[in-house]
Amino acid sequence: MPENLDLSIVIPVYNEADNLEHLYQRLSKLAELQSLKSEFIFVDDGSSDSSFKTIERLAAIDPRVKGLSFSRNFGHMFALTAGLDASRGRAVITLDADLQHPPEVIPVLLQKWKHGAEIVNTLRIDSAGTAFFKRVTAGTFYRLMQRIARINLPQNAADFRLLDRKVVETLKTVRERGRFLRGLISWVGYKQEFVEYKAEKRLAGQTKYSLGKMIAFALDGITSFSAVPLRFATYLGLLTALISFLYMIYALYQHFFTSHTLEGWTSVMVTVLFIGGIQLIFLGVIGEYLSRVYEETKQRPLYIISRKVGL
Ligand code: UDP
Ligand code: MG
Image (cartoon, rainbow, N blue to C red):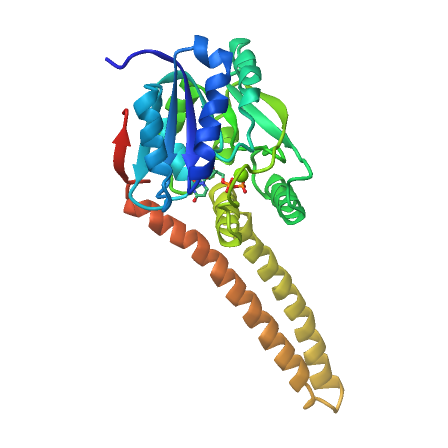
């Protein structure tokens, strides 16, 4: 029988060795965590630095600290998933290892939970520390998602949230690879509340979200919650057909009622290139969805754990 815990804190870690000690100290200082039976689950997402060594060292001095280490880098969403899978608390809080999610907000989350909320989301109030580029791209992405996906995705939502055990158990049954957690959280429903917090600057190191990872994240989000890009092909196809029809009438008129018909190289080229371009774009869109269907059907595990401590 697993022991009963009040709270699990899940922390995805990718090359964050310089932040872990400090994060642990900040968590340890919270009086709420002293009075609650808690566990801190650090999920090392295939770090190449000494992150896991640090986790092992912390686990040796504090039995609340537990650690998992992936066999390679699987990505933030998979690290969060592994943490949720391993957690046993009646409530689970996920937070980043770089201290951009201030642990001091935890008591506020717990308060809302005790008053009946089953999911307590957080909304980031942008500080000067958030890069202009990230603000603009994130803003555009969430506006786009709002329009094309039928899920309500608040802007500035962070992966810093409290989940009730019920919600964690629900999420554990969702094993799709397109792990767009923010979307899934909105999708599962339950009684949700929001808490605002002021994002801090990353303590040490650089963002682990490269531009490539951000694009992959956005594509996962869109394709796992919306088929609108596919439907665009239909709309655009209809529009092109309509234009072609009008052009055909014009061409026939030219042929039968005027004498100058052989010019037209330009219009043929424009049409061929335009339609060719559109076809390539939508082949790409279909490919994006198809590749995801392919990934899902393989049913591979979402992550591979190579080492554990305390679990
Ligand atoms: N992270 C991870 N795997 C990755 C990338 C990031 O586990 O492949 C972790 C990272 O260590 C951090 C959290 O996810 O705890 C958020 O990453 P980061 O702070 O770099 O993203 P940003 O805050 O810049 O969006
Ligand atoms: Mg960060």
